[in-house]
Length: 240
Image (cartoon, rainbow, N blue to C red; front, side, top):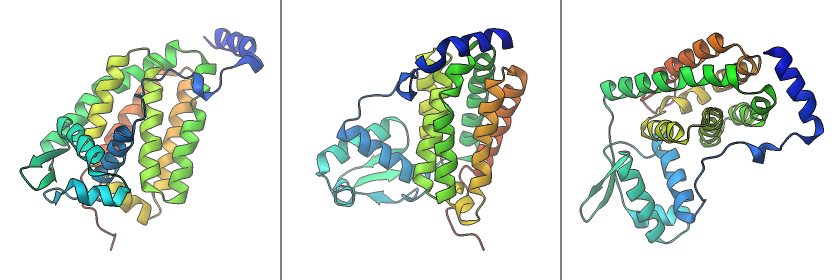
């Protein structure tokens, strides 16, 4: 395995593809899609709180756009189960039970852990290394204490990693599970200066996968999801 990877790396050399050459399953970035991503981020971090109602015009003013793309984006989130419509008022952020969070965590573990093992054991090291800038973006966002940028970089890294397995449907399933999750604990980690340390797990995971250690990669992915479950749905409040 290592000899095959070294030979491939030498063959690629200076002709290695740029980051844009990575497998990608991203949708076209329309205004609606960008607003939907921004709304997901503020829901995931708890900036938009469960149970409270938010109107499209109010959110549109915040984003500096018309209410129409905001309303359309909110309908996307309705289909994802993140918000629910409230007649003549707007949208309410849905609340998740502990049982639902456990179920999301279990499904992600069943999908992602064996998939990263497959990537480690079958994908050339050169292709894996092209994900390093994404992992470094996670670390940089954590160092800046930028929670929104951290969550977006984390999402891009993990979806790009799974995309290396070559199964677009798998990537979409995980994308949906991540969208439905809540990471209210991330701001708390940032306030406690613990986010930077947490971000380094992405570099460790990438190093192990690039080294072709499938069992260790699977183990780290299981641990990562377990740690993520630990910060899902923590109250969004400053630490004492």
